[in-house]
Length: 261
Length: 212
Image (tube, rainbow over all chains, first blue to last red; front, side, top):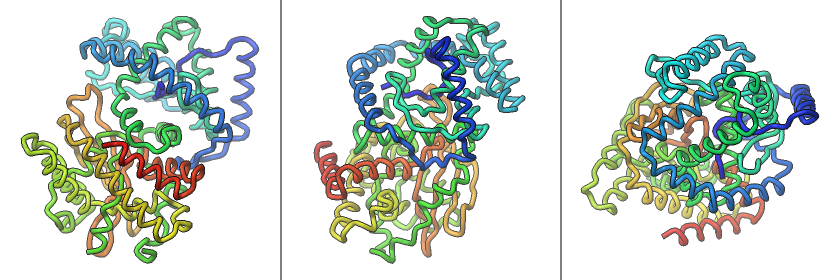
């Protein structure tokens, strides 16, 4: 399956579906609560999600993993170039969402990165901005909603796109629609193509991790679900690796096992 | 010391980011070496140095390196505690026999995972970047793991270190925000929810023996 590292790309509905997505976002905002403990899992649609997960694993075995193996044989500089172009295409999404979260500096850096890498870095092929000391950060509308206090909502396993939540899926749609008028205007088909390359690239980079989970997890679905939810919570906290999370702390507050052995 | 013996059970090195995992068990421990560190950060520094030192010795036969790593693991972690935290609320429900079986399998799975990782060392190094006390017992030590050969940036890994009467012990690893204990607790909880504790133990046994 494709492990989606950041929400934000991918095809999204138009027309009436767009209105529905907006309504959904508003509904989420209204019901949002302040924090989302990383150790909580809310998965009311688990049977459905597990079915999708099974199909994703099948697609992975048959198509995505083989493609990633072929891709992995390309020389490193080519893969780095592809990754740089993909990253660069995401910068406008980061500019928008950093702005919405009131993170002026992040927005400015992302805008600067986009200009430098597009104009000087040959359409994003070279990440000169990082060389110049402008560190890359990623913001998407799922994170923006989280920043505003919207809870993740039910966990959702998306076909091909992998683990998500209702909030993050809505965020993905908003990012797609909002950036359509902006450069680089890829359109639906272009977005899907980029998404596919992105998925293969990401799958290739995550191969050690995925192999590890396959070899060692007793329940791969539960492992990916938990890791995804924790990772997103960490992204919303912005790199602050460990938040003060009551639910997390509670795990460690049990009495010393020595007394029970 | 029973505490040290009990430390032999956890799967600390599984999943999350490989590196975190690869670094932890490492360390060429001479028993007790980890105990004389004064602060959690110094403790992590020592354990990390020991681990890297073992991983860097490609000439040494694999069984010997694994043995050295297991020594570090026993010295630096409390696998019995971690195993218990991973089982979470189900620990209470488990019978004495189930607990013993579970903890033993837990440890064996950690060691078998470590054995798989032995050859995966890609020149990683680490830096301690900070230390933050959580409460009287626990401290989070923040590190950055540099991967010169991975073609991507460093990974942020936090180590949760518990201080007990006579030693420090690693009880969780948080890689880029993903806690090993939380992830495994979720996984184990899901299995127990479907199959019960005996089912979990059977699955662990199968995983262990199907793996060789």
